[in-house]
Amino acid sequence: MTFTPYITIYADGQVDPSWVGDYSTRATLIFSKNLDYNKALSRKRVNIHLSDEERIYTAGSIKSIWIKNTINTAVDFGDVEKINIFLKIIYHSVMTIAEVEGWDTKSFEKAYKLSLADNGNFVWHTEPKINKGRSLKARIRISLGKDGRIPIVAEFFDKESSFQFEVLIIDTFLHFVNWERAFEKPTWLDNERFGYSFLNSQLLIFANSTSRQSETIISENTWKQEEIEGRLKQLTYRHFSNDK
Image (cartoon, rainbow, N blue to C red; front, top):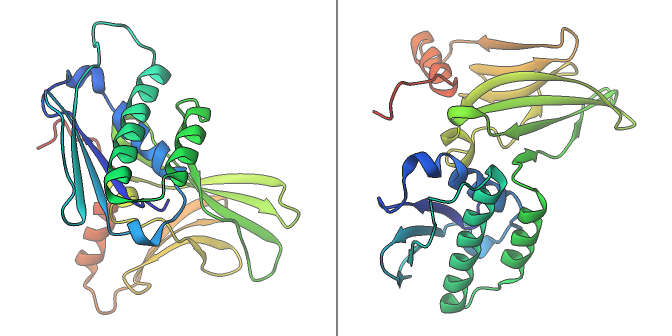
């Protein structure tokens, strides 16, 4: 995903959190997935505030817009309807900022149409890569699970691009997908292993196409064992009882 610009929605206490759930997050990911890369917006952020007023502030790289909250939480909307409500908010916001800033709006219009067509589903794939032996292709599938869990799944295909099998490499946090972007560039580590190399190859997390299992290898060098294990623990999803 390009995240150009990087979009965040803030409810500012104006919407019942239990109604919002993770729908605003899903909408943001779906819209961002469908955005074309724009180098001019690669360091720009759009902060959307659901508020009791309307105003806009666009000085600097962070573009903030406050829009009046008109969501009727008394209505029992379905999941897709809720996501579409937030997609409309995102589209309205980026188009308003684009008009002020003189941004090209074609990519936003395209992203909105594609996002509605996704019907509430967020799934993003990396580009397929073929191994050195040219016998297998692989790519990563990223989706949004419950409670912020992000499954990082390797999908394997034969050289004719026919699907063969998939392997769950790791469950991680959203932060490592949409902020740190730690899982954007998978690679073939050799002819059988597809996944990720972290910390100058001191931490390998990958799917083994022979065993069809996920594996982790720690090779201590410039980092200490406990430091590498700490990074692995950071990347690995755990469910916490509260935000704190």
